[in-house]
Amino acid sequence: MKPYSPSGLFPSGRPPRPTYREPHQVSGAGVAAGATATLAWLVLFGLLGRSLAGYAWWTLLAGGLAWLAALVLARFGDRGVAAGIAIVTAGGWSVAAAAVATRWAASGDWPLW
Image (cartoon, rainbow, N blue to C red; front, top):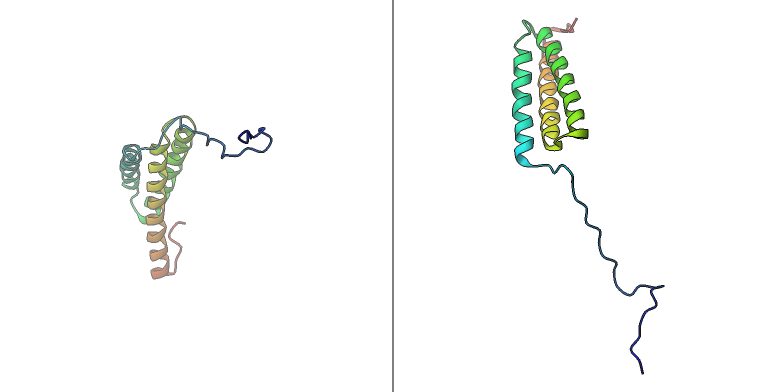
């Protein structure tokens, strides 16, 4: 009797798994570089504000510009740097929002107008 030989219509084993390669792999160094540069960027823009309202508006503008850079980097460049930019920008916006909310709660007056 011959050993059973499958025809291929019903495969007997698992198919080989595909191997995917990232064109721009995310590295910890890239995330750290993006985070550090964005932190400096937000601090420099935040220092331009002479009041809480100025700080909040400058931080919002700087974060928007940083996110535009992150979008370009995520599409065409280093996605690790883009991730670092996005993470720190979200943190910077959170700090500005907390400062505005704290002043608003303490004074009852919206501080951005």
